[in-house]
Every structure is written in structure tokens, then in C-alpha cells.
Image (cartoon, rainbow, N blue to C red; front, side, top):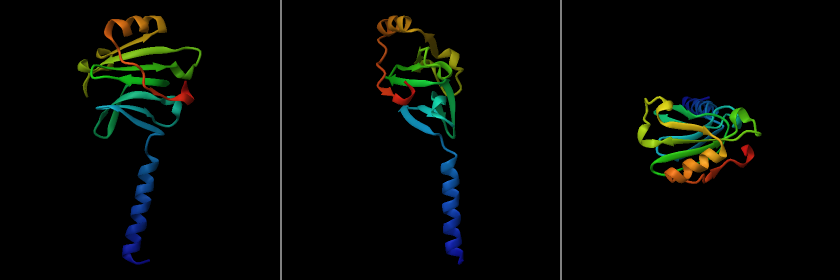
Length: 134
């Protein structure tokens, strides 16, 4: 194999290897916030993207999220237990790359408590839904 072909094959192998290291789900929510699952969909959560890392904010198993300029909202089945639904919101102006999530994330709430918070704070609707996790 000539050097040019060898380099091309090496590049293809490197690209394939890098692609295999990605998340099974990686979706931008807004700004630095992403909806990601590392190995399986049931790990779906919200993280804060920093360079080559994504720091967890709201853990698994998220099935719905939404956002506006002030908040990120999320609904999850904790540990993929579909008999339980919990709700969270994240206050964006309290969050940052090195912020402990406990400073910016509120919850878990049940549906009734979350409805009270939604009305009080005018929280956004959840416009991204992962149907297979609902």
C-alpha cells in the first residue's frame, strides 16, 4: 500500500474510532445545556457542556425537557422506574461551568408541586420529548 493510501486508511480508522466514543444520544437544548445518554437511552440526562466534557445537572431517566432564557425544565422517571415521575427546573442565572448543581437545580417535585412552581415562576413548557422513554 502506498503512503498516501495508508494515510487515508489510517484517517478512516481514526474517524471510526472517534465516532464510536460518542453518546448514544446528544442533543443541544440551548446554550451550554445538552440532553445526553452515554451508553444507553435510559441514562438520559441534562448536562452542562464544557469543552470536551459535559457535567451532569439533572440525572436519569429524562423523557421531556424545555427551556427559556431563565430556566431549563425536565421530567424524568428516576432510574427508569416508569411508575414514578419527578419534575425539576434549573435556574440558569445561578448556574455556570463550575457551579455545584445543588445551587441551580430545584426538585424533585411531584406533578402537583411542579404545577404550583410552573404557575409561580412562569416556567416554560417541555417541548422536547423522548417518546421511547416516556
